[in-house]
Image 1 (cartoon, rainbow, N blue to C red):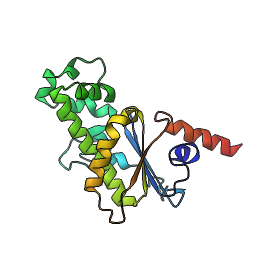
Image 2: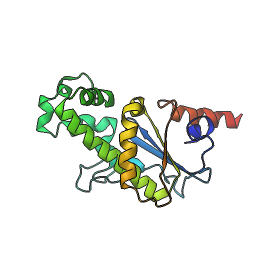
Image 3: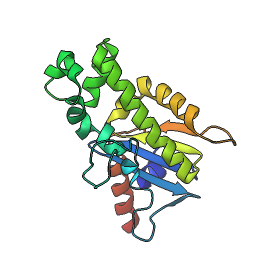
Amino acid sequence: MIGESAYGAAKGQKDVVMVIFSTGIGTAVMIDEQVLRGKHHQDGVLGGHLTTDIRGPLCNCGNRGCLEEHASHRSLLPRARESEKFKDSVLFSVEEMSYLAVIDAWQSGDSYAQEYMNELISHWSAGIVNLIHAYDPETVILSGGLMKSAHVLLPIIEERVHSMTWTPWGKVGFFVSPQPDASVLLGLSHLLDSEQ
């Protein structure tokens, strides 16, 4: 959030939740231009461990059905292996099970990938809705490797989130980091610059 606030998609924003889709799923929150930290430095950063399925798999955090356990990069292959249909998918033979591989198979019409993408989008959207309801932001910023496919995914996620959120004041704005692989590095760079 610090890097995006200084250089990227959060520049000029006051109330923001950010989701980074990567190996795991990271989050951050800024309210009234202040990054939230909390008494134990966990405020806003555990969005990947919000529950999106109460009967879901056990996460390494000890909770069940975490967003990260269902829809992070590291969870793609374990979750796919749970389906019998996976064996008949082009994804079964890819070298690396990645966001890009799933999206490519989905766009090519692979029936399992289409089903799986709908499930992933449901989890991503539910996680974002949880953050919106918890922190009441004006803006959601999405980052991480998944956002290399924002041109395809953002309209779908945005529509799904808007259909599920209770925001009588209006709609939350969505922005994608201009450098989705560099959000964390931008933050480190800003912190180093601030110390000089």
